[in-house]
Image (cartoon, rainbow, N blue to C red; front, side):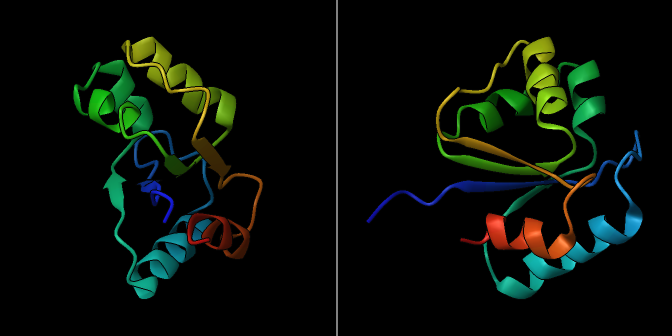
Length: 108
């Protein structure tokens, strides 16, 4: 059986670049699914402070992140000194996709 990816949900609390309705709906769908997932307050803030938790997240192997623009998320991890792997990482853009699309991709 293939390894299940780690699911990470960014609340974008500091930058607030993701529509509140989409964030709320994705979080609700994750909670309702019963799936195990991690949540962080704000990846931007974590990267600015070089939060060591980013190292653990980057080292997860298979990883699905619900946040904002993929290039921005990749840049945040790189800026913090914990670059994401080029393989096994999927970044889902809550700025441009619907909550249903994000949840479906996270939970498949």
